[in-house]
Image (tube, rainbow, N blue to C red; front, side, top):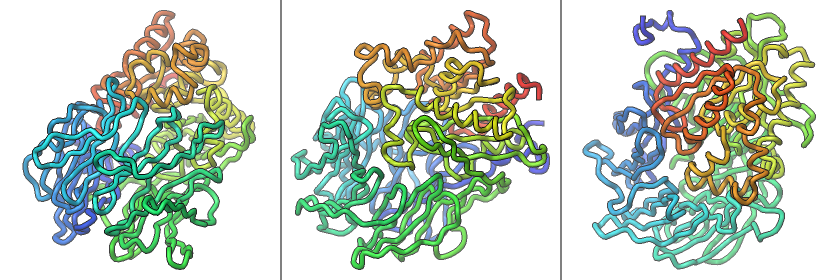
Length: 601
């Protein structure tokens, strides 16, 4: 019996969590709010869907073998723009199709394929398109949509991106890293001929680099206020920058943790997203009264939210125990996908562990019905590195819990949500700093009786896969199994083969190129320690991956094979992960089988 022939009752819960249809937070057209665009896996592949709220009709807009998730609506709601790459390689061009359906058309004729660096669409159909290539660095182009050739208005070797267009389409906000620090952007506002109107740079060329981010122009005609995020007090906070008047207004949002924001549609208030210690919540900040009011959401994680024209707020919510849903402050579920319902999972517990750089926050889940422990335990290490694990629903940890494993997720130094110093701490000793924190949490997990020290699995994808391979080589006695998906394995080769924007990030993290700081790259490369690896290793790699390219993984695998180390490699025909549900299930099943076989469970 194939998985497609299984009844719901015959299918294991862990697989149902992947197969259950889910939807993302709908984006709505600014001038046609009944027209929305969302992502769903309803067909078994993540694709874009058009939703006409007035009629209730939903239509699948894209249909590609490896899926599509990068798309947006024009302000008038007439057009769906989506990014067309090749088999997940992230290199391609923008395409557009009518909202009501019809043929796909080239959206930016005259522009060669590239990696995307942002997109903003004006009310007159003008689009500003960001491109990134190895040859050109970052370029921004104005595409008028009238048959004239695109006009380049920005070019720099360092990474940059489109921020936002003003309501009237006359001003463009750009995030750039011309100062050479790819982790901390500066801002520039230009007219559409590239003339600079205003600049804001908190990096100041000093030892304490501070970042800025574009959150959006005021949604009001003639309004030159730009909502931005800053780090001037050691965390992300919102500020209003009037680019015409040259004034800056820091907003006194007295909440601990990182604070993001977006405009309410009439410009009268801000929707505040507050993130702290792996949870998040929403608030409304009234600009006239400078007052803060809580938006009622359940405990857990809000992974996206938007204020509607009627003042209600729609948000995508989940917790580790409860699958995600799109909800509204008006009450109830806004959008769902028909089909089976994903089973719930186990709530998380918080663990705070003293580490070499300060207290480390870990999220812990214990399997139900498998005794009191110690348990075989998997350390699921998040990617990024500037990201964090949260109290949110994730199908992969739930699969391990179903098989009797405890799950530990560590928000190591480099993670977001714990202040700027925590995020910025990993420079120059890349990977090694994160592993110090993971080792501290591992010691706690063993000493507390949670984890069986003989059955510890180190696992992760992307940066988490990199830390897995580096951990197996630098902490060979600590881990019984290693599972690395789309990892950095040979850092020097990875640097030379990866997309240009990641080269810029690596130069920031290491303080230079492999030729300029070879000792740092060697100290942080899993390939340096491959001969010390003792644990069986499973590696999954996308052959079209521009972030963790295949050649550097092959170099690492060749070294494992040369000394007869126990390993298994799975190469799949996609990029940095897969948008196909069957493929995701296949990979999780292979990881489970590999671990269960080698741990004799």
